[in-house]
Image (cartoon, rainbow, N blue to C red; front, side):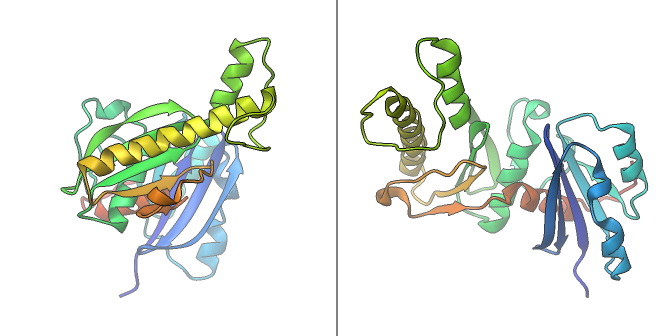
Amino acid sequence: MQPQMNLILDIGNTFSKYYFFEGDQMISHGRQAGHDLSFIPLSATVDEGARIDAAIISSVVTLPDAAEAWLAALPCPVVRFSSATPIPIRNAYRTPSTLGPDRLAAAIGAWSLHPGCPLLIIDAGSCITFDLVTAAGEYVGGNISPGLHARLQAIGDYFPRLPLVNAEGQVPELGYDTETAIRAGVIQGLKHEIEGYINHFKAKYPQLLVFLTGGDEINFEDTIKSGIFADQFLVPRGLNQVLRHHSAPITKQ
């Protein structure tokens, strides 16, 4: 039997991203600034004879009418990911409707790769998030902290006598001028913060596996590199698992 072909749509504030999955295997992906979904190569996929069996969309914005029309014209059922969508793990967050869909999707994506293990998912993006899934498959919650660029920007915004420093450049152990002192302070501080979370939860869960995703690269000490997996596609993997898990009849919305 041919694996199900799924279209995954992840709509952020700035970019719209698409992913095609055949079963668990991602076969293509792309992104474009804005929320015009017509850039997605749907017609080319259909012309090549590949069917699209179902689609799921996760969006943090209200889509424009043209994007809604594009969704309505899809030749497949569509699921809109929300706190009410059935998922393959248990969500124990006290206010599930306020939980960022990307955080939950990333947790599901990590669980799909290593079910039965305690998992710490770290997303190093505009904000840095720390989310925990137990070995029993329960999402218990997480923390949110300013990301790398937000920390650098905050120093420039709140301390007029200090310069706005770029993240690219030398990062000594101790800064030797104002620029390197700020950059090293922020980057080293962020690294130590992440390492602190990892060490804390490894002490509680000795079998803990750590997943790192997001746009900012973090270089860890050799002593904690074991058990850390870098995967920039945790969110679409999770959304694909949600779509596969969605066993109830699906209707176009």
